Length: 156
Image (cartoon, rainbow, N blue to C red; front, side, top):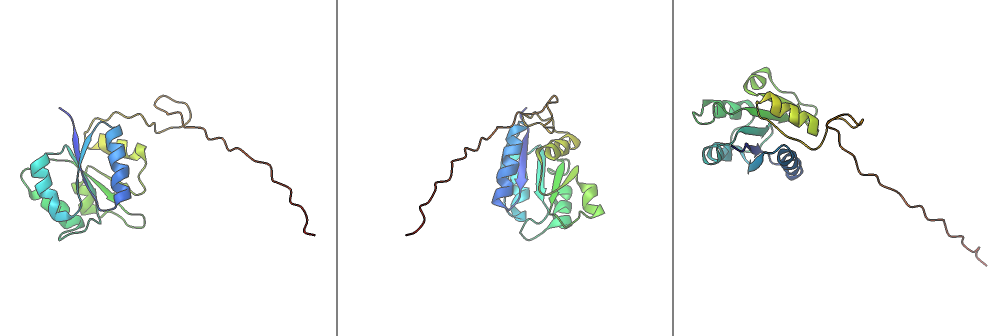
């Protein structure tokens, strides 16, 4: 059975990043952009994991939103991965409802670790290390071509 994720976020750049990470881990992704769309999306898509940005706009936010997900009979057993902004923290109550929490900006290694904590198997081509160890990836090498400066004639 293929694993799916529900990306509940509002920032287009963040959504694109998480979509790329999800695809690399072998997950198919759906999205919800405001809090009131999360439960209908869960009922329709039946995701394996919910990837939730804490500052998602809508009628309910943060802890209240996580509580409504946990109270829903269809959604109560789906693991939640919480993403929170730099300079903010996750409350202990919210942390108890989440399988994992990640501070933004999100690295691929942190994303894979959060999926592991949520019980979602992931495959990944992007390694968490860059030192040639197993699981690492060869990064592209960019060569900068330097052009000699042209000599200007002095003004006459």
